[in-house]
Each structure stands twice: as structure tokens, then as C-alpha cells.
Amino acid sequence: MFDKKFVTILSVLVGVIVVGTITVVLVGEKRPEQIIPPVVDNSDTNIPVSENVDNWKEPEVITSDIDTSGWLLYEDYKFDFSIQYPKDWYITGWYNDEKKQNIHLSPSPLGPNNDYGIYVNIYENTDNLRYKAAVNSIIDTWKYKPVELKRIILGMDEVLQSGNLTFFVNDKHIFVVNFIPAGEISSDVYDIFLLSFKVFNNFAKTKPKEIKTDINTNQWQQFNNENFGITLRYPNGWHSTINNQDGIFQFRPTESPVDAPIITLSLLKDKYIKNGSPIMNYESLVDEFMKNTFMDKQWITVNGKQLIQYQSVFPNNKSRITFIIVNNHLWSLNIGDSQDISVDTYNTILKTIGI
Image (cartoon, rainbow, N blue to C red; front, side, top):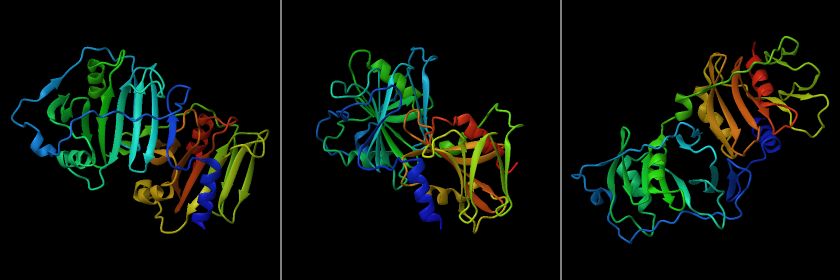
């Protein structure tokens, strides 16, 4: 029952299945017409990292006096890293394939006439390799390899650097932070980005986002389904559609068009779910459900409980799916990219589930 129904729900509500190369402008309005990958200009040498680093040489300590108090923070819960950037800069992200993501930061949108800026290239650390072995695994795939790598200190972290390439590693991914200088993009600015760049293991778990809303639900309608033992509240004047057989319940503003995105509560799995179990016990099951969607995963806190939520990576897109366990059942609460339903309304409904 689950597979067919869930695929249908994702296709209708999310519509973000990855096919080939997809470009997403995360900040700013203009999409680039063409993706230009970063240029890695290194001489051809096959010396492995472990033999190419002068471990006896004192590492260089990177510092900066540039004020970043007005900068924004980009947190990526899917790849477990964060980076700061000026508030008037653009962030562009795209996938080449399932094993590599690329992020570009620049004062101007990425395009045919603009390839300068800061690049973050993300590779899978499929074998959970330690730092040097992980760096070697990436360099071995490059035609042009770094001539020399040096050790540098960024805050409390020691990493390897070669020219405009700096390497970071966590349990699941390898990050190559590169920059192409032009205009205000200088080595000093590059150092600031390096100092702000942080990688984590299970970042979304260790830093769950608390969901807060100020909407008063005293006048809202009460939804109570005795078949599955689940309740929630939804705005007064809304329309509900009930499918008890499949466990699908839909809620929409009465004035919304029939084909408009709605909020859907869906039963995903009703077996082998232990009552009172935390959602983290079924994280792998949820990840399997969501593996073909172009959405970012994060952990959130609702009413003191940690839940898993996936959000669309597209800018200004409200689509999200939250997973919750109620009375031995695994449920999802979904919202499409609706113009009639705010994220605050969705979050408020989410907070009333089971109350």
C-alpha cells in the first residue's frame, strides 16, 4: 500500500524529482543560463597527499580582520556543513550527479559571463575514509593534481590547502573549497570564507530547529479519527477530505482552487512501529522513502519531540514533508508550494497533531 501511494503523493506535492543536471538559485532572482565549473589550474603530478605534505613544516595560521557581523549563514542539513556569506551575494547550487553537488557564491549570479567567486564542490566519502585518505581519493580522480599541499590552521581545525583549493572532510562527504579571483574576490576574502566554513557529522541531528508559531488555534476546527487514533486542529472555514481506507486526510481553504496545493496527512506505515518510539529509530526508513526527491533533510523540534522534515531546495518554495509517529503509526504531513497556505499555518497544524 505504501509504495504506490507515497510515490503519488510526492509526485503531486513536491514535483522535484532530480533528472540529470538541475540548477537552483538559492539567493537572488536570476538563474544562470549556463553552469561553468570552477577551473583547477594545477600541474600534472601523481604524488599522493601523504607523500606530498611537508609535515615537518609549521602550519600557517589563517586569520582575518574583516567584519562579518552583517553576513548571513547558510546551513546545509543534507551535506552537514555551513558557511557565511555577505547578505547581498548570490548562492547558486546544482547537482552534476548523485555523488557531487556544487555551490557557487558571488556578488553576481553565476552565468556565461561570470565564473569568478567561491566554489564548494562536494563529493561522497563512500568508504568513511580518514582525512588524508579521503583527500587522496578525490585527487586521484583529477587529471591535474596539486603539486604541493600545505597544512593550515583555521580556528581550531587543521586542514590541507594547495593554492586556491582547500579540503574539508566529514564522515560522509569531502568538500573542496575553491575560488576564482576577480574584482572584490581576493585571497583575503577567500580566507574569510574558509574561516566560516564548518563541517559536521549528523549536523541536522545535533542542531534541530525548534518550530515556533504564534497563531491562536482556539477557534480552529477539531479533526479526530478514531480508526487510527490521531487528532489535529485546522483553521475554521477550511474544507477536509477523508479517506479512511488508505489513511489520507486533506485540508484546504474553502476558496482554494480544486487543483491548488493542499495540506495532506498520510499514513505511511502501520506495522512494526513501536508505540512511544522516537522517529530517529526509523530514520533509515524515512530516508529510503525520500531518496528520489530534490529536498533537503533537517531535524526539527515540535512540542519537545525531534521530528524529521524535508524541505524543497528551490527558493521561496513552501513544499515540505514532516514525519511523525502517533499511536504505532508513521505519518507524514505534507504541504505543496501553496499561495493560499502559509508555512506558519502548516507549522501550527503540525504542532496540534496528537494534542
